[in-house]
Amino acid sequence: MTARKKLGDELYTLYRLTKRPLLIFLKDTAAVFFSILAPLIILLLYVLFLGDVQINSIKASLPPDFSVDESLVRAFVDSWMLSGVMSVSCITVSLSANTVMVQDKERGFNKEILASPVSKGLVTIGYFLYNLVVTVFICTIVYAICLIYLAASGGFYLTAAKCLETYGITLLSCLSSTLITVFVAGFFKTNSAFSAFVGIVSAVIGFIIGAYMPTSIFPDAIQSVICFFPGSYSAALFRNSLMSGAFDKLGEILPAEFTKGLADSFSMKLDFFGHEVGVGVMYAVLAASAVLFLLINLIVSRFKKF
Image 1 (tube, rainbow, N blue to C red):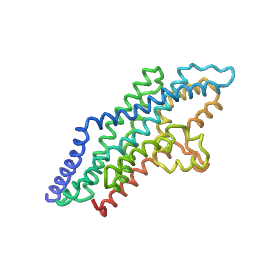
Image 2 (tube, rainbow, N blue to C red):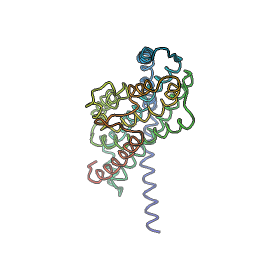
Image 3 (cartoon, helix red, strand yellow):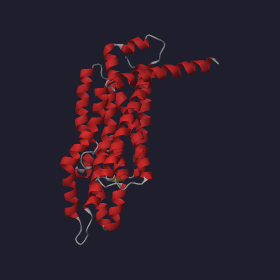
Image 4 (tube, rainbow, N blue to C red):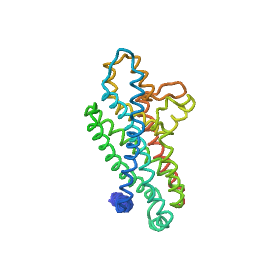
């Protein structure tokens, strides 16, 4: 009975530790608004500046005597663009959500909490759960907007199963990103330094994980280095899922050699030192990164000085 009561007390403490930063974040309506707006701005930039370039490039490379409806080509390119938006969003939203944790550290709130009989590990888990809830919530909204955009543009070739699969990738990507960003944010002591770091990462992360442009355009060495970042596997999984409908439709019309080259050009597979990384391996690596950083967070929290 004592053990059960202790477990109940710890769960209630964890609930309170998770609820507090969540309420702080939700009360800041501007932060919530811009967290949703940032991925949509990326989508808008894609549509305005990159979409037509990619469409014209594919049309120009079509084999002679083969005609493809432009709406199908646009659906393929749009799906590629949305894959980049989703993969980047899972990282940047999670990273920005850690602002509450850094602010608490700067204001000394964590020291007040730890003055009570609350373990450091429980505090870390509380911040992680808060971050995960926020990241999943915002990325779910972004994903819904992406599906609406595909439907409105006439390029919706996804089955219900693929939609669910893509949402599963979203959840796994959010989990991995949250565990990694909570660990990284734990090293910052001031919000000003962390805000600068968030700005830098948000600007470059899309290039690092191959979300803003196909990794196939990079040298082989760079393609292999990109594979050391878990976000690269997230981006590739989103591409394989979101682009599958339009890609399969193109495969019914165009020669197999051309569609294979198209898949390579748009980085539907990853190249790791000359070895092609399959979808199953992508899932395994992304899940392994989540497990690894879960263990790292729990270990580091025991020795961390808040």
